[in-house]
Length: 226
Ligand SMILES: O=P(O)(O)OC[C@H]1O[C@](O)(CO)[C@@H](O)[C@@H]1O
Image 1 (tube, rainbow, N blue to C red):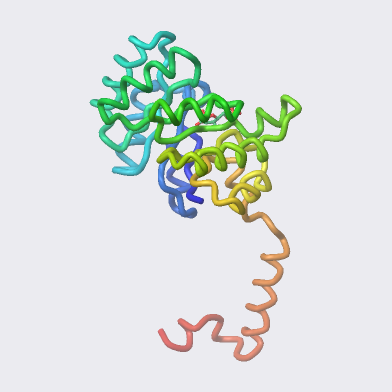
Image 2: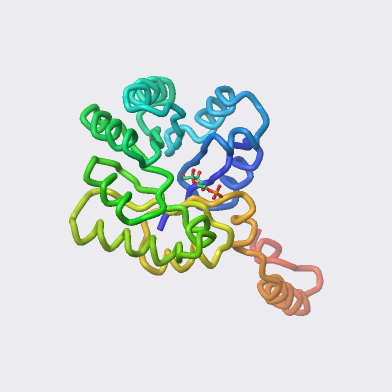
């Protein structure tokens, strides 16, 4: 499983890139709204910072013809490793079919059911993005649904990968990693919870204190060898 950042705040993105093994950024209109800045300038800044890594941007048109138009403009502006996020409804499927014939990278988004994912895959989507936490909130099981989607894609030997989205805790992510889900996109808040264990800090502190007791003037190997 690879990890993407689900955020549009450039400071958060820079911070997470500095510490975590991530391979790109996903955005959606609500994330851009939350960032409270000019959305175009924000995306330009993100693209400049992440260079050729994956950048996922969602279209806002309702009908296939305008979705295709918007996708072409976004692809032209943000480059080849940009994934156009298209909601998986009927108009979206129609647009995905058309855009695939133009070699556009597509993330089929707003996926709540395996049927949607299967259809998006047949239409040519590169990624399908099930909304794990939102599915949980509907009273279904987001993790199970995502695994089911993965099984369907594997059994049907498609090239489409699962990009799991909408997480509220790290356990949801880890469960999917266990099943080899291709990629997960996580918010700044969820990243913050990945390594938050006081036991780890305590263990490290004990190691350092023990070592320091050997020679109080030499705390690290750099002090011995540097
Ligand atoms: O339920 P949430 O946290 O709003 O997440 C919706 C998800 O859908 C996406 O738009 C799919 O990529 C993500 O950007 C986001 O994680």
